[in-house]
Length: 42
Image (cartoon, helix red, strand yellow):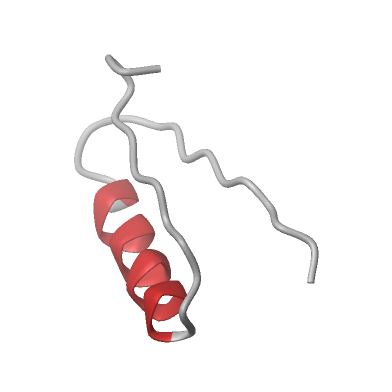
């Protein structure tokens, strides 16, 4: 399985954090490693 990166951009209040959290939780359930970073860190 190839690893992929995701980047969500957009205005405040569009659900980026919610969507990324849902995806991260599903990956964690499948024993995948997840790294979550906010824009200031990048």
